[in-house]
Amino acid sequence: MSEKTDASKNVVEQFEIVNCVPVEEGFVKLTLRGHLDADGAPMLCDRLHDLRTAGSVKVELDFAGVQFISSTGIGTIIAAVGEFRDAGGALVICGLSDDLRELFEMLDLMDYVTIRS
Amino acid sequence: MIVVQSIDLVRGRVEVADMGRATPTWNTDLLRLADRARQVGMSEIVVREGDELRTHALFETEPRAIASHSRTIVLPETYLAEHRWQVQADWPVYSARFRHATGCLAQLSTYCAVLLTSYGQQSTHLMQLRLALYEICANVVEHGLPGHDTRSIDLELQFGPGSIAGCVQDHCKRFDPSRMSVSPPPDSAAQRHARGYGIHMIRQLLDDLQHEFNETGNRITFEKRIAR
Image (cartoon, rainbow over all chains, first blue to last red; front, side):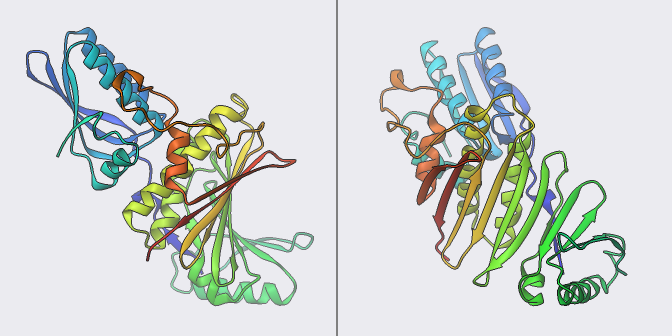
């Protein structure tokens, strides 16, 4: 009678920063995973703040492991882009899935945020 | 083997345990029980699985529809208070009640994803609908009655041949996302703000959005057209 649907395939993956690698002086690459939502965004916000405070002016965020971004996540990225620019640096995004790229396009963010394939 | 735990004649409800779910005759036995229960005027069957979930299968319709559309969703009862479904014009309508608790948004998002995936939604539609519902409910949590964790959020998803419609009902103060003035995102970097994208996203992602404030709270109905 009942088709038991496996929720585990769709379960919300808790957001985490799985890797933080210095590429060169002042340039750090962060590898992200999970759902960048209201629960996960504060972690990213705090980490970016810490990096800026520590002198990093350029950050690359690898979104290949991120399946979902809520408005809070979008807001965090927008705020961080502005703050890194103000500091004379840049925040770059790479690894966006087609679905998330479509979301950025829908919000007219493609020209605002530097996105690499 | 079906183990009937209780029969509620007033509510027309038969409650069974999930013991024996793994046996090959489970579906047949449950359909047989549903058929007999319906003959004696019962209106729904409830399957409990431990403390984690409740599956309410209404059988106002044909048993074959029960077999086609029943979805058992395993989510912690801390968040998912109720999950039920019925069939209208051959298409299923799923409804769920989520407890207004910290973390319920993620669980609600999972609930939507499980249902949408089981109906073969393309990943783009899946992500868009999941995101829109997340944002609607995030507004309930943020603007409705912050701190009132005992309230609940009711969600309904109605599948159809060319669209998915539904509604979100809260128990909060008035909040109408369809009437909030939201400007398009500005071009200038200096004018960009970190907040306020939720409403914009909801409007962009859904094809129809209506708001009604009733005696319970806000009722937001929506529709997303799906190209199949």
